[in-house]
Image (cartoon, rainbow, N blue to C red; front, side, top):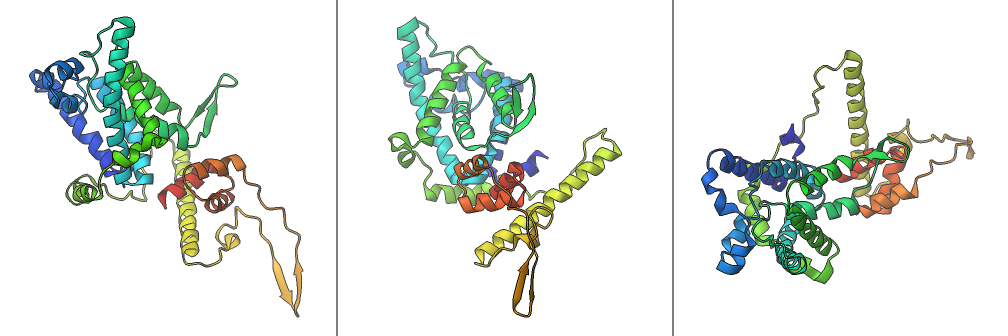
Length: 340
């Protein structure tokens, strides 16, 4: 199931499989080699062990950190699907390099302010770019309420991700330094501050090289039309889930047909494509005399939802058409626009 969900996200799949496998290998079979992957800024500063700056910021030595960061990378795969592997890799590279510089600054600030030597106790792993991904996640992913509890408190589609981030943030004594440096680097790169995105990026030749060599290894097959039903579900629940899946597939196919018509320059007949969702208007022509029946007013679209889709990079026209056709269902409109 995970392999299918990682379709069109080979870099995310690689970040899930390779570091996790190496982390398990070091923890279970090669514990004596873990010292080579310790993130020790003191050794880097005093003994010029630059290789520790690379090895110590790739592989997690704590399996709890490995598990949490893998779940977060899996959820953040949406950015690779939206921006492409090269731009996604450029963001990870830029935040990785910037966070290393911020790590030194924060460690020195902690030492001079509180007299705490944290340089040799920083957690290892690909953690700073994971925290950096929370910046575009907060800024560009729309917040959709799922349930409401305890009055004003509500559960949204982003709640679980923030809980995982909080769990990772509290997993160690000095991981807050890595978290802050990751967030700072994510803000700098996402806001294009100091033009870092023009300096720290993956060149096109390198992207083509990895696309030809590694992408076939980590590419995933297209998701199948069939969906497995959870164990223990009743017959009624299975039927309901099947009907919802069919409705969703029908909606996406209709969206795809609309997009093809737009690309061909033709006029879109929404009434023909979405008769259950749009108000119908019947026009009869008889003897060069037209009589139009009174139709209900057009469906009003929430400007807040239009703004959220526009923040994700879609045009206002696409956002309006998708929301009107989906009866103001932000989830359906977002899923289609992201997949096409």
